[in-house]
Amino acid sequence: MMAPLPLMAQVVDGAADRIRADMSVLASDSFSGRKPGSPAEKLTTDYLIRRFREVGLEPLPTGWLQPVPLETRMMKAR
Image (cartoon, rainbow, N blue to C red):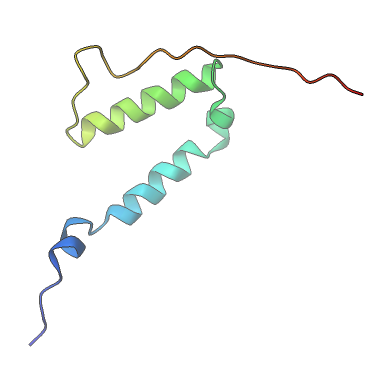
C-alpha cells in the first residue's frame, strides 16, 4: 500500500509547472525586460493582474496597482 502524499505536496501539485510557465512568459522577448515606465511595464502588469484574477485573487479597494515614484539617475563618465 502506498502512503498518501503529504498535504503540502497535494496543495502545490502542479504549482512548479505553473510558476515555470509564468516565468517563461514574463522573461520572453515580448516583455522587453519589463522596464518600469516603459510600454513593457503595462504589458507585465496586465499579465500579472489577469493571472491573479485567474487564481481567484481580488484587488484591494484602491485597485491592483500602487503608484510608486520612479527616479532615474545617470552617472557621469570620468
